Length: 389
Image (cartoon, rainbow, N blue to C red):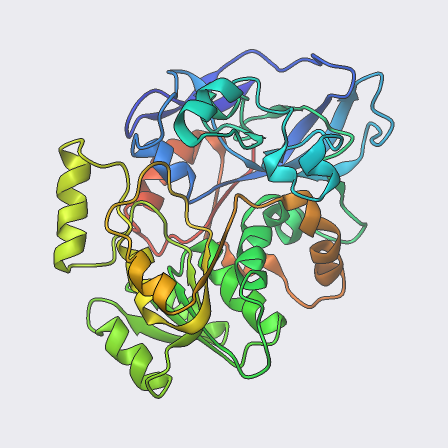
């Protein structure tokens, strides 16, 4: 089959690789009908995530048609259309039973590697390094899905691939970001990053009752899409973000702040952002938390900071004194997608949201490597790429 594979920093290729096979009785094989390039994939493209190996198949936003089912899998049938969560979860362990599917204790065979980095291991992920399981990803013609009787959700009749594909990751992630904010009537939510996750966080905040959303970015196409979703936008290159949020909230600060950017922010030209870049470039640091620092300072007393942007290692000079003395609540996670899937699918079926609004580019797998570069460089108005194998 054809698949997108990682061969080093800025080196994605469309290669011919072996077809996947059933390896466990609970597995399923799906023929991929649509997949997407995620902002998190850019951390692989930029060589930020450790434990990648040349030839790894990447991608974790995937859906398709079931073509083979393991002997113990009673949940799926050949021919079912399914969306596959990016988190691989057994459904039976301590965390899965409590709905914390992204903390699954059984799905990462390389948990010892993750434990050295983070103390404990999260769930395995599709196409996202050997530290997180070494699973082949879904930017391919076929995908093996472990624990396929727990993860994939069947697609109701009448919905297109593009309406449901993003239930695999970015819609639940953006929704979780807003859900973490415990939104009350009249709240103002500030969101850093108007990429795909930020766009879903904007719309989710309004679905959950926010009165106002302030969205921060600098890319014109992203700001325009945020405005179309009802947000008031700030351009970090021309606005002093702290001063503007203070002004818009009469000096109180935003009720909750969402970091939808993570470890590789383009935003920020202050001294701390420059120091972050120098430390990462000289291997004295792993992440650049400028956005998180700013979100903390912009949040009102006893507000919430919701973090869904990906960080990989140690964060430097995070203003914990501000957070502690002002009573901030931090909430963060890799999204337990399975927890959110039923309710979000229902919102799509009811027409409350059409997730396809975020798509700007459609292409084949063969065009994938070039579109990684386009997406990374924010060229050609590229916000979200969908690939059709």
